[in-house]
Image (cartoon, rainbow, N blue to C red; front, top):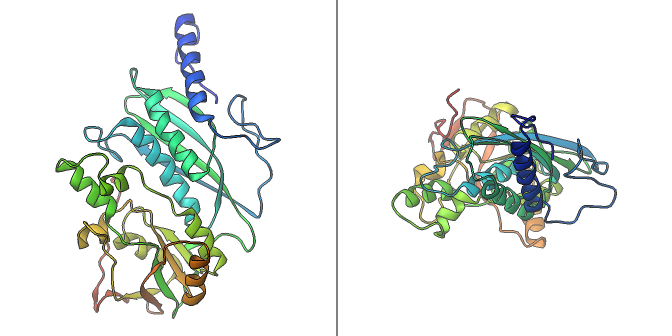
Length: 316
């Protein structure tokens, strides 16, 4: 992991910074390093050749924007930053190869706590942290760049949906938004829905399975079905007709449509039976069919009514 010191000439400060880097490297270096690779410790990471297409994606999580610091520990910000970035690989049917992180924070930030969350997500997703950077800033933010691979016929894009194909999601929606609501009302950090908000689970196995089953378009639900499905339809130049929205137990319909941060996958496929068979063979929860694709790009309905665009949108 590289590190730029704010005051490299200050001996005591530099030694303190070196100590922080050493402790963070120990936190992040839990898993074995494949033979021939080099992760933290040099100017750049060395990775084995990728299989098929190489995938690269970047995500940034900011304290106070992506996580309420009055309700959640700092390590949850690190976990969510990595999980959100890895979910972008899942949305294309990819497998993670590694990630680099860049942390900005004001003096006094508990960087070890933050990196414990980063390390937890790296272990759970099988995406090792292979390098990164630290710098001083007014706010705490974690920028994560992930690298992945897509063997075979390559990545599943948003733009491949065609009329007549079916639309499915990998699970009921609204759990993350409901968890935030419950936490604000006093629920514990161990509450099932609260955990869904603070420790999201990227659907990597589901993405790989869907790609293998011949999915024609796919996307993760980071900002809510009410906006992400429109984005997929825009990219494909199609419309859609929905007959249901699966609402998670404990969530509301509005949370399921516009809450965001569920990180379930939208899957479009011409062959639902094959998709279900492959999911069953791999021990995965069966996806839920919610509608189908139509040619008319202006036709975007739920049970005959207009399906409005709504969900999380950044104010830039």
